Every structure is written in C-alpha cells, then in structure tokens.
Image (cartoon, rainbow, N blue to C red; front, side):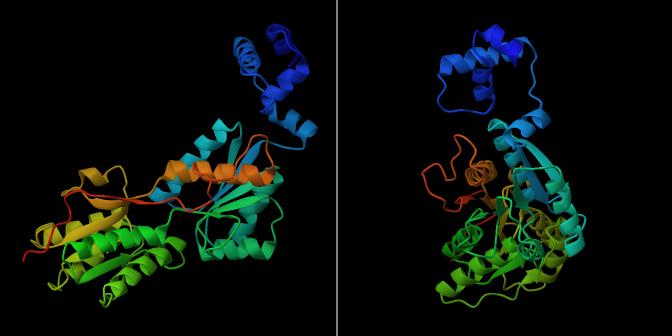
Length: 333
C-alpha cells in the first residue's frame, strides 16, 4: 500500500480509503490510486484486510444442488454484482436438502468468515433449517414463502404465472393445463397459485395439476398424458425445459403447435427462442435480481456506499415480463 501511495502521490490512508470504497474521495484521486495499483500489479490481501477491518469482503452463497437455469443464472448475477461492489463470493453447494447437509454447508461458509449470506436454495427445508439454527449473520434469501420478510427478494413468481395464464385466456383458451415444478420449491407453489387464481378470476375451474421435476423428460411424460385429452387446447409449463419435453411429446403424436396446442413456458432460457415453434415464455430479470440481492445484503452488513433497494428506490419483487413468440395462437372461431 505504501508503494502505491508513493506512486500516486497520496497517503497510505488514502489508498486504504480507495480499497474500502469510501464515498468522500474525489474521483480524480480515486482514479490516480487505481492507476498506480494497475501499474504495480497490486492486489489487496483479503486476509490481512480482514484482520484490520473485521470484514472479509466475502459473501457466502448457499446453492441448491442441480443444474436448473434459474438458480444458475441467479448465481452468475450475484457473482457479477458482488465483484462490482468489491466483494468475493464463496459458494457452498448442497449435496441434499436435509438438515445435515444444510448445517454442514453453512458451517463451512461461516468458518471462512464471510460477512453475510445469500441463500439461493429456494426450498422450504432450507429456510426452515436456517430459522432453526437462528443465524445471526446478515443474510438474504432468493424466494421465500413469506410475503413480508426483511431478508427476502425474488422475481414475482405468482405474477408471472398470471401473465402466462391470462395470455392464453385472452386468446380464447378455456381448458388450460399446468405442468407444475417439484414439491417443496417456493417457485412451484407461487406459479401454481398464480395459475389457479387467474383461472378462477375468469370463472373457470383449473385443470388437475401435472407434476414435473424441472426436466425436459418430465415434461415429455406429462405431454404423453395430456395428448390423450383433445379438450385441452393450451398448457402453461412451470419452466421452459418441461415445455420442451411437452412439445416433443405432442409432435411425436402428430399434433401441430400452436394449431392444436398453445404452450407458454417460464424463465426464457437462451434456447427458448430456438425451440420449434419459438417458445412464448415468462422472462425473469436475473441480473437485476442478483444486483438487488447483493445491494440488500451489503445494506444489512453496513458496507460503505451500499443501498438495499431497487432502481426506483423500492424493495418490491422484480417484475417478470411475458415474451411473445409463435408457440401460442388464438382459438379458431
């Protein structure tokens, strides 16, 4: 730090303020210090800084095991937002969603001295275990069953399901099936709630749920069951992968899309625009969710210059967006 200070023509205390993101520094001074750090290939030692500041500038992230697009995209967004704020990310993957696995993963993160936690494991068992452990470290959860929760941030899952279901209803469909995600996931429950609520708002009885596992294979199996009921003219799938399997099953049985069946997915995975037909789906703004998670957590930690709200100054859920493509069509008169 003293070498950087000499190169930049400032005190070593000023270098320390730059490293800690102190808001009172002039931009020109900060730029001069950063340029000197680059010239000298200086990299701050996090362990040494932690001894002085009692902060590791590291965020711990607890992640569900699996390769679902939503958690993976959220993790990437959290990592990017943390790096922009000068924080490292320490990740612990859950081998299973049971008390022992959750406690073991949390113990590892806490042993590394993380400043706060982001819980990216949106199952009831995970949050239940965290409540039983009475974690005192600042933490934020991505999705929760509770509508009012200071630790919670999420995309409005129920609102996204309403958008999907309403779109199909406005196209004239009345028998709309729903392929739900697996039990125990907060997204599953919220999307089922949005689907059922919108159907009932239109005076219609929701169809019996078909349960999936977020995989294309489970969507394919649900599609084989649905293809036997020609009265169903539309399907809202709880994610895009299951929608892909559903579309495969219907095409395999000689059914046309969207002429014989309209399909709406959820997530807007990068491949959704290249399904055949391209998939109408509900897009989640994962980069914004990650930014808000990190901002909220840094606000709870009390990090310099942190903020805990959305771009409009609110703490509302991130709003989803319906992306219209050609997998849906109006019911013929």
